[in-house]
Image: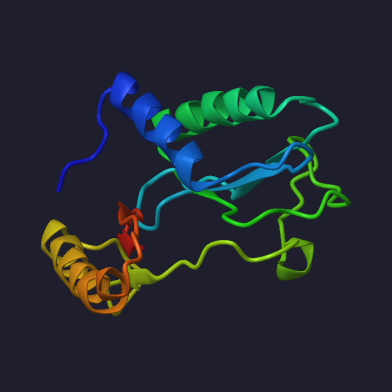
Length: 162
């Protein structure tokens, strides 16, 4: 299993992410940072939203998100982005810790399929992660490629996301 290990490869992976997650001009970008299970020195969950009030341009929001993501990743957090557009009325920002909920989603553009080991109370082994990717790739062939859809599969921190 290959992970983006260098800062440059992490920056490249985040840049590629913007081709998947299309950000509307006034839409917020929200991340959830979770400390991995079983890793010593547990830290609280962080909900951070980069909105158009604080960052008027989409590129400003993306840069703020990227800098924060790289920092939180460097201290050990697993990071997740809210995949679908957030209602402009959502009051979350970088400081108040509000989490995006289903009611805060404007519409669905993307579907997430999540593959994890059976017991999620502990981290998956490398073997288990490899096995989740095998299952994910089988679904890609059967449910996506056969319908001319082009899924993107990524490491989720404990398995695979399509």
